[in-house]
Length: 199
Image 1 (cartoon, rainbow, N blue to C red):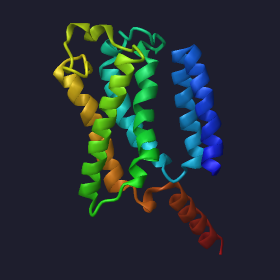
Image 2 (cartoon, one colour; image 1 turned 45 degrees about the vertical axis):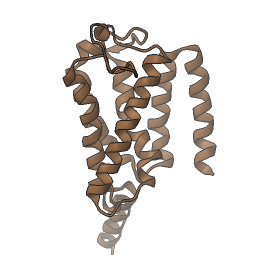
Image 3 (tube, rainbow, N blue to C red; image 1 turned 90 degrees about the horizontal axis):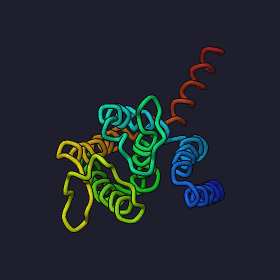
Image 4 (cartoon, rainbow, N blue to C red; image 1 turned 180 degrees about the vertical axis):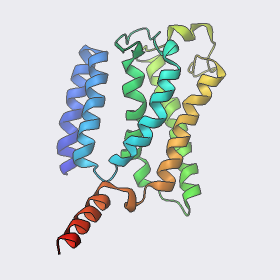
């Protein structure tokens, strides 16, 4: 219930701002997710590290391509703010909302399930973004994209990276989302250490 009371108003704020200005909406929405995750998802915030480590080098490597968004023009040192904010946030939202609800007999099976769901999710969001929100890269106009769905207008290596980034993140979550790596566990160990030293 606490999470609903926190995330509900945040989602409403995002929706209202996004309706009037997509760029501000995306930037504020991703900022809210980042900040609120430290309040409601403290046992999972460690995953921001791999999410950022995977997505930001990719965004920087492809910055010339990402600079050609048709509607999202804000940038930081020549790198579009949209993928900077959207990539790690998408990975973390899938972890918060979906991956934590999936079980598997082994970490390998969890990785497979996570990766399958991520792949479906990236296709779904790409479809909505391109065909309904009207967001596309001018760079991609020379590429036909996927038939029927009309998505992923880019070279093969860029399409591969879209899936590979998420699959690598899914592997990290599947193999390392253990309590020993969470904020609560680390905090408890630190407190116990200081308590022992004090005695």
